[in-house]
Image (cartoon, rainbow, N blue to C red; front, side, top):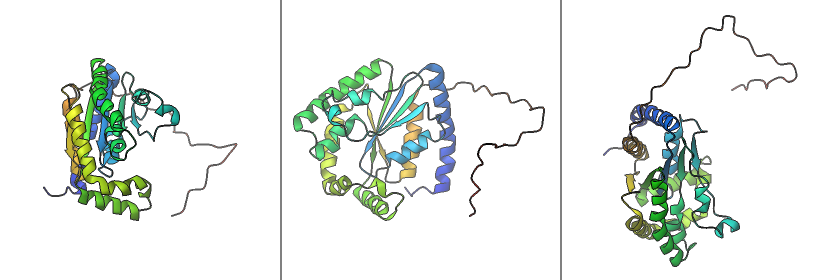
Length: 258
């Protein structure tokens, strides 16, 4: 399948983003709690997919959670504890840019967790997720797939682009040598945690634009009927000439000449 052109992508994305706005309106009206996990290799495209979903949704309703490495205190907690603090309240949508599955991926491959800790996690994750689902949380788990050739292209782009350089870390450099190890870790994770109550969905992100569309369409199709009538807000005429801004205490900056 040929790579999707930008204009084709935007034309397909627009109606889906309108549906996402409708989904958010439905969640607010019904009190639904939605959790979406984005997992995958470094540079797979998690951030871009998250941005496409949340772009037109109220940021007070739709939150992104991207946690840094745990503190010393967090390392002494129940493993899932720091994630529980970020779960949604009624009417909220939470998008996890990496999640509790760090333990099954980077922590396992890079040796940050012991084999016993990884095994304990793989046994506990389905139980933890059962508690969420049984309490009414709508949980969606996505793994974004990309071949190493594409990963290498994206790493090189990040290295050369100062606007993307922050995305490239020393761990990424090491991960290049552990592509097969990450594959083995993913397969073990899927085998242990792909359950009926919390299944995984794999999405091809070798073409990131097509991958975003595929993921969003799947998400929208799996949420219950989200049609809620939108009541327009009435904006009657002012009945006078519009006011101009006035400043007495301070003046605004002069507009930048470009």
